Length: 435
Image (tube, rainbow, N blue to C red; front, side, top):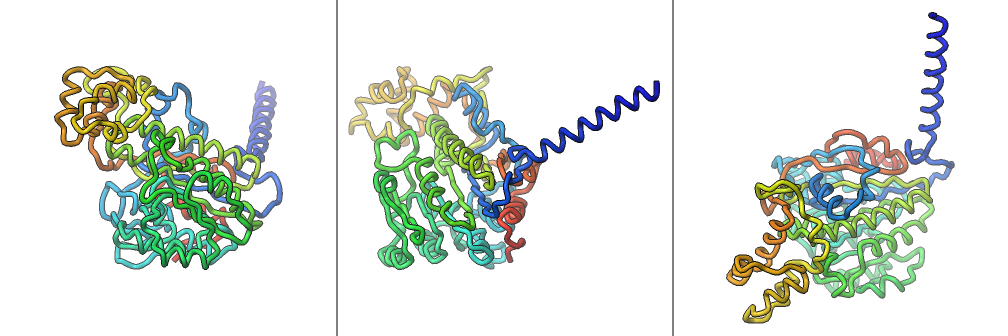
């Protein structure tokens, strides 16, 4: 009897070993390259303001699992050096430098010393190309923290100048009004090719030696739900253009992509805005993962930087969710308000046209009499969809972490946001800590 059990154990143990070896050599499981190519890329994607509740509500809204779901590997702690609740500046600085800092600080330590950012470290220790893509202005906290320094996150003109001086190879987003004539002249001297709308981005041919600067709005870009009323490119279009250019470098690249309008929608509790920007972000993630699957030497990291608003799945003392009802909404609350006439006589018509709802008399009065009618529209749509909120700022909850590709298995479990750059540095083969 003992021999029989021993044989069973031996066969089972052997099967486990063989299975483990097969899995460890599967690039999609282990993150290992299937060839000897030394070119290693990292695409770091930030869903600004995104938390587990955002992910769940989007899954319900979308009616199917998210593209991101299969790649969930962990959760990330977000607190800053000055608060249990971070802002985007401190969170992005932590993920760029590996150092916790105060809220509002960009690439600067709590003692006001400049930190070495991810892009500075790459420029110093490798020949890789770099890029920043965002649906906010390029001088906003998240993109800025990967290449600039400021103890005030609103120093937009200084940050714009620093981005050019750092020679980031691809810069695509909003913020045109913060790039002065002098900064643009400097950009031209550094071989940046400037594009300012969707068609220019699509048609622009960039040589290997050129850099690309896309400035598609004066400040932040439009929410995805309103984008068709503009000439701005989508996040996916910007990201694909960036990867196409950066991938020309035989040494590889680092690209940070931010879905910044998810957070912007969260701050005003505009659920249709948020859901449509998550969809745009998801489309971009799929495109990036498709690239990584073909490339086999690219690590893709997707993470929220903090939660915005404390969104809930269900609320208002009711059981269930009705977020599917918002699929037919075709404009943000602020866009709808801009369609009101001067006397607000067309409030009902505008809400019927863009939100596909018939306002009750109470709802109509709330919007008509409000000094902030877009806030009332967003509140009404939240109540109708049973999406609850805690505040108009940030909360301190952990956020989801997703990973795919080269060394993706290193990003499992609960970790601090300052751990991410250390793990990324190993893939990029640059020394850490950066300082």
